[in-house]
Image (cartoon, rainbow, N blue to C red; front, side, top):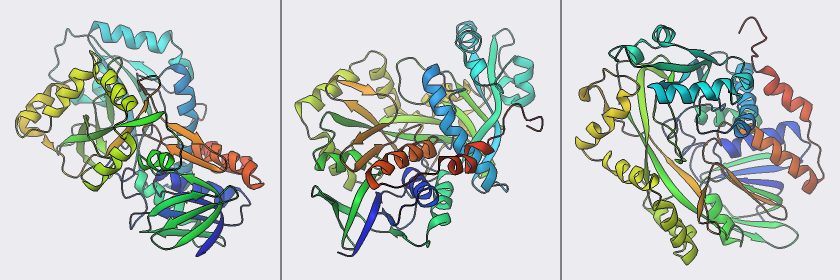
Length: 449
């Protein structure tokens, strides 16, 4: 063996990095290793160009139920608390206004019910319902050029965190790397995991490693690895590639989300200032179904079919999902957005929902922005499962974390650490973990906030 560990984490994105930080800092585990196939931490979906850069609380995400918002809120507050304590100069995040925007009588009525009757106003004390004049004070370009007779309403909050999850993941790793019993191997792909009944043997490009417990946090590849070990046979993936258009004139000060279309699992179109450049405004995402687990990497087409397997259950599931009268037109429409010239003009009405006066020459397809998010398919129910999934074996976890996985990375790490205390007979210092994360979140009761 080239190394023996109590715990091995496979995947160095935001989820794997958060778990490494949590376990190495707040448990008494004796040895832990993280393996990342890329040369750097957080080089794929967690890189700031490959995701929405949003810390999702559930306050302006209008596809969230109240129960889901409660769960996501707790996780987001952990991340926000960590950033408040460790990123005073804003190297990893920017805090700006954000709002959910309703335009027209039907949308205004829907947003008012959500705020006043469905409990979101109570759940989020900083969230306020604001009218046209107040919207114009915060985001003048959202109101300018709009028909003055059109009703408008927004749910607005100052808790608009724009996060560079790549830098956050790197910070998590940096804080524990080099400590006794903590090893980080980048540029090292885990080729196969063997389950012996007593331990796990990991076959890597660097050699063979042994662990008592294993957590796989490898994005879309988590299910691929799970299936190779006999887990997750009732699951498949619908990989969706997100892209953005950009404007370089600083059209927005913060985040402006439109209302989510019913039955769609993908993020509503929104506009926001880029985390490291407030003069660059991103609009999107578009959502294109692709047969690959990573954007722009043909080698991962084979990985997709390794998960899909062309089984009757997978084929029937895809057919059932894509036959939906709402989803199918949406999928087809998003294919158009990639076309030169035509694509930009086709997407422009969505952008004008946010900034009415924007012109075709103001936006361009963003080069180098956008990643792949695996939407989970339940092949028994022949349906999409919204959000994240966890497969639990005997001493092994597989985490599949599309949105809001980055926002809940510390919450997921806490849950995994609690599971590891049972498998490894270790202690988890919950109080210290909370003191380092959620206890630092600025509350509405604090007059300085």
